[in-house]
Image (cartoon, rainbow, N blue to C red; front, side):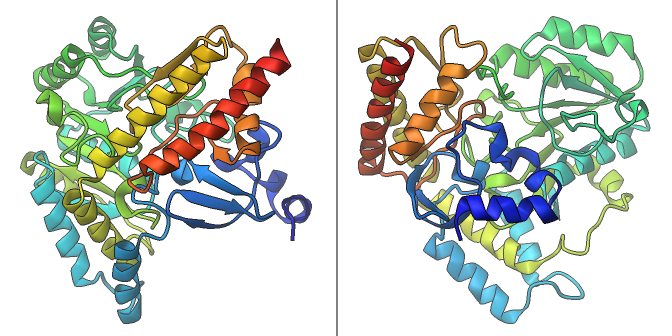
Length: 404
């Protein structure tokens, strides 16, 4: 069954044939929609084409597809049971591991998706403060529930009424946003760096991080870090820990279990009581297999310096792309942490060059993305990156020939 055949069949039984951020119709024309398998840092689509994978399933794959230690832990738990009448012992073990690993964590609660975690974190903040308003950076992505989805379709104005926006990295803008709802701020929610789609990423300025912490303290509000996308790729302790800034609540998901579905909220002792008052649950939230996979993933990242491996591979990729772009006469911007990279072309406002180049990369066996940040994994070896750079070099040459 080919990708084209599956798209036709899906059109009959799935709205639009595909939906959400995995909808290949939103990417360059050559992107496949359906995939057969993954192994290490590679994926194969249903047409049998092999790619060196720099999207890592949009973030969840942090150790490489089908990592033996993770798969063994998941299989052991699956042999005992997964969705039971209550959680398995592994839930306590995973919560203990998070508390031991993350300095700002005194407790953990589990769910399934990043959206679950960000929503749950704000519920805890509101339960703790008795307030309603949330300060959020303009354009930031925090999930797909009505309060935060990028699309307004199917939502009501009331569902966005308690959000007050500010400009990321601007303390002045953050202070001004707080002043508009003085006395009613439940939380400030921030991503560890600005990773909005369709535009260059922006690392956090340490003064902004520290200022956000100070403002939350002054307001008596919760500082919530949405570490769903960046968590376990920048620092196992939390992405703002290198700046000495600890949140009250952190939302985790994506890379937490190397592809198994799980999310978590961690928080401080001061918020333990309010967290207990929530009725926030799901039939599959306590499935034990994903918890076993998460425990194995975090332990492997810790034991094998997974973040260091990703940083070295990401630096190799960034340096290689820079040299290639320059050699082919392109000015490019490479932004974000090296473990969560992205490349844009200078002056490419409509992303037409990025679309064409990413399509060319696909033809040479490299899966990148034209408008969303990429992800490194600990499975990307020096040889893998070197092989990928052979493909990107050919793609730069073909892009230059096409655009002149």
